[in-house]
Length: 191
Image 1 (cartoon, rainbow, N blue to C red):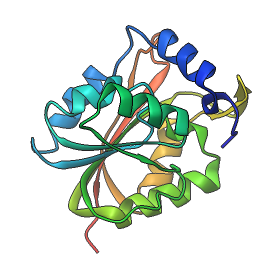
Image 2: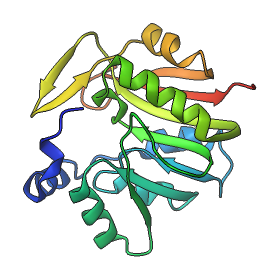
Image 3: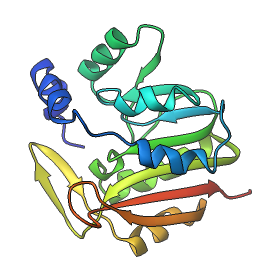
Image 4: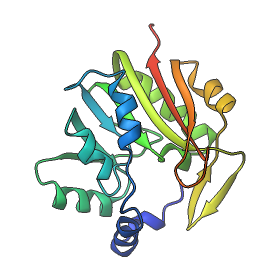
């Protein structure tokens, strides 16, 4: 993943302002249909903490981000929260979770990094663990504001996730424009 954009206090403050009014509440509602309330959840890429705040109403959430500046922001806004500096591709973390959630985070990984992340998610999930991830719909990749963005299709996500996860659903939804995004929900396959 490109390093620059989320690493400075200024860019974090800019992103927090830009993201006001946007949250994953609808995605989390779908997550709640497949993961029991009070389960242990890892959020990959908590960013400004908007989704973390919603998730924490229902789950025991460990937030994470690869940006020390976002971790500082998160801990200052949520002093009782549990936050870790964590790379989405390696997920170097001890412990197990019942669910893993991310909202437009894993698209910053190239294909190899995403494959590593999926394998690692499988390893840190408990039996019957559930994943819920959103992506930008499209093909190819680009660099936007210094960040790598990898677009995905339904068939591409099915292919990369289906080795370790039974796909419960992959559906299109609207973030800015009709069907510009994909939500994938899956369940950890039995050994």
